Length: 327
Image 1: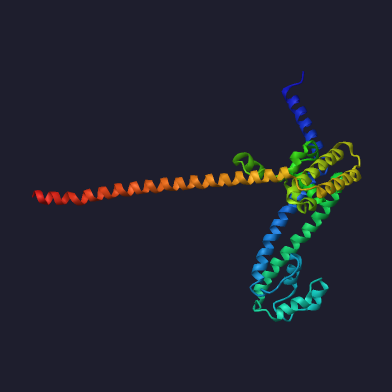
Image 2: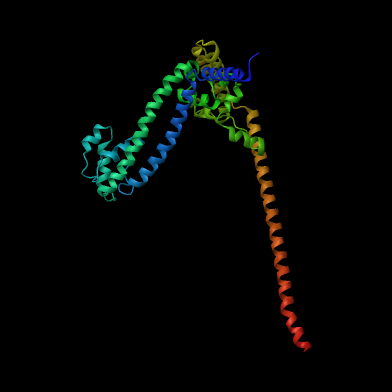
């Protein structure tokens, strides 16, 4: 019979082995990479917003097509925008003629050397974050296509990685029903519907698919449900059978979307939409009536307090008079 210490060592060894097997695949690294990419995207947007607001003091007319081009220009233009090396800017892929025309009629003054160096450091920080994002994006693409070949064949690799991150693992994603996959990313709207009776969500991050976003408003739910069902099938193939069914899935999606686009507008959905709008308007009216009744009750209480205060005031004013008359 093994002792308590031996049993403890054996169980610890089993736990370590299970943990090692759980992290043996690259899906956890992919989850961390896509989460890091999204966090860097938020940080880059904040940095660019500050950069554009700061440098906009000196060059408010500057308009470029991308944030990366804006940061490059700020880092290379120098203190004098009218005397900048526009040949070098053109070699970097920036529309130098447009920038030169904007600089010639700019109302902003040129910054001094110290302040420009501070602005330049901010621009370089944005470019560094952008380069890190590009390297992460390359890793996400390579890893997602390797781990989920069927899923990445029907949706974007970055969206597939985000679905994996929401699910937690490829096995969990494969075991999810299509209805759960359809609502991944819409948890707040779902709980709001369950708690307050608002409209239920029809899609989560699947709305970022071009086929869903460009569909008719009444068809978006059907298209999202279609993609969720095919993603569920593709996830099971990627997690268990490892078979390549991408061509079959793509053909099925294309044919079904064509049927959805050519189908007439469903009358039932129109009636449900009208009924939902009526219910929402009814709830808003009830809320307004409740708010008005609460406001009236509050005003009544305030009026009663005011009247009681006036009575006490009059009593205090009249008491000295009676005292004087008695004397």
